Every structure is written in structure tokens, then in C-alpha cells.
Amino acid sequence: MSHNKRIAVYPGSFDPITNGHMDILIRASRLFDHVIILIAENGAKNSRFDVVARQKMIAEAISDAKLENVEVDVTSGLTVEYAKRIGANHLIRGLRAVTDFEYEFKLAAANSFIDPDIDMIFFMAKNDFDFISSSSILEMADGGVDVSSLVPKSVIKYLKK
Image (cartoon, rainbow, N blue to C red; front, side, top):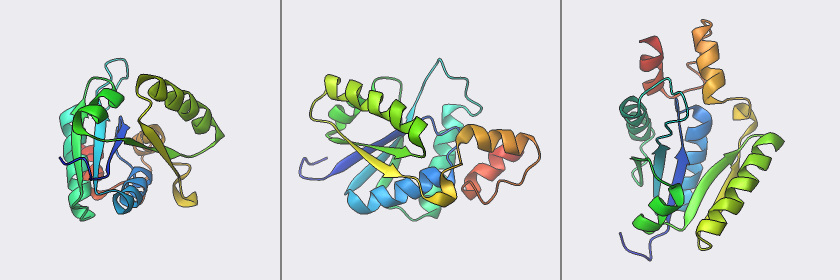
């Protein structure tokens, strides 16, 4: 990838991806030439869906949204190192509430320590999405609540399994 392209990485566990994530992804895709939604393989986190399932859900959601400058990838290493390797200088993050801000502020400081050239770009969640989290989606779905308006179509199939 050429270095004059503006490349951004949107990291997360995306277990599963939500319409809140998609909203941020769509907005980021308008600002950057290329966006990579990066599934962070985190052994410490108990994931509902394995990495392959998450990758498929996201790829389908990207395709359904016709985001031609977006792709999905997986890493088990540091996001900052991944970004450096592919020539990206921007990390995308979403903010829902003050509690997110505190966590993201610490993360941004750590990332800046690792690579001062990395810029964190924060998108505020839109009001319709600020209560959505992957874990709340799973809880509601497990409780029999119809969450189809909160997640991409590709996720519904996996929630029904």
C-alpha cells in the first residue's frame, strides 16, 4: 500500500459487530482512503464467537453496506505494531460515554508511548447507538429480545445458531 494513502485501523473484539460499530466504520470510510477493521484476538477475553465467525459476520456486513474501501483482518499482536506494518497512522475508536473516555484516554496514552506517530481518531456514538455494546446485544438476544435492529443482518444468523 502506498504511503500517500490515508489508511486507518479500527480495532476491537467485535463479538459481535453492532450497528454502532457499523456507523463508526461507515463514517470513517468517508474520511480515509482505506479502513481495516481489525479483530483483536484476545486470549484473555471469553468470546462468544470465534475469530473466523466474527471475520465472516464483519465481511458480510461490509459487503452489505457496500464499503469498497474497507476490509477485515485479524491480529494477535499489538494494534500499533500492526498499523505500523501496513503503513497506517490512524486508529479509529468509538466513544459512547464518559466511562469509555477514561479507558480510551489511557489506551491513547499507551499507544502514543509505543508509537508517537499514531493518531487516535475518536467518533462519538450517535444517540441511537450509545447504549449498544456487544455484551448487551448478547444478553438481550439470550433473553429472547429481538435485536435485529441493533446489529447487521449477518449477525442475526449467528445469534440464532
